[in-house]
Length: 286
Image (cartoon, rainbow, N blue to C red; front, side, top):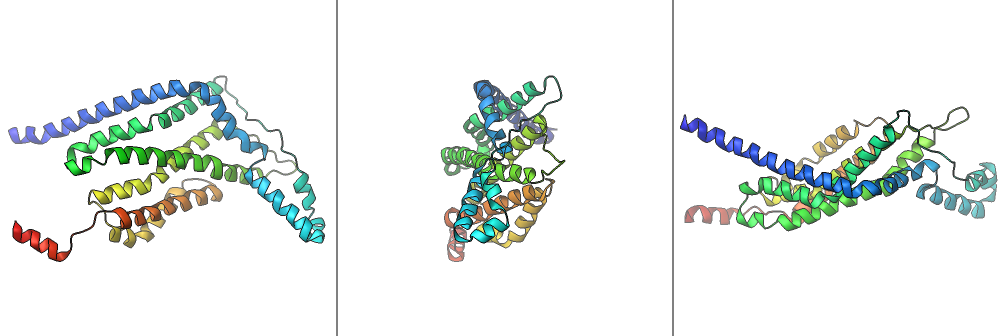
């Protein structure tokens, strides 16, 4: 009976510890949500900018077409590129069909923004949960882990919003034609964007996770390098859950790219296996 209690008690203690950490995380995110509530309108305005059709992509395209007009005027006239250069942004707006839909959208934006504001505490609580199983030397990595993880997540979210999101919306708007107009639903548009913000934040945290696992001796450079093809396959599977090819592509490439960065970080800064002679000497000393 005591043996059973000895097995059950640690498990119950882990559950109690997990519950404590989750409560702290939830309370922190709720506080962050309150701080971000007044900023949700600005966030919504920023993520809806691409639906006007004016993004960094259109600016690049116009510069290229203008250069074509200077160098190859005949091609410029033949393909009517002047029409593309002179095209003005269209007035498009999000649409909602339920009475409280804008309110719930504001809540979702505030929750995600609050979660991002609370990232240092979130990562710190995750660290405290795994800390009992770490050595004293490993526990010293808490500050680098919390700092780098929070920064990496934010960089991933910004990378998506500034670089990837305009590509996705531009691709969607390219299907507009005579008799076919875009009519974006507010909830669908924002939900899609927020989901990808979280996904890209986690993707950019992948190198940090791999390096951490290497420092703990869970994975090695040789193991990660040997399994590159499986990482590529896993990236493709994760990307396949998104319907259109463009979204799949812009998820798969960064995801595998972060894995590759993680592999090289492990090679440069990961935990080294002791040389065979050192290992034998250590065994004899024992």
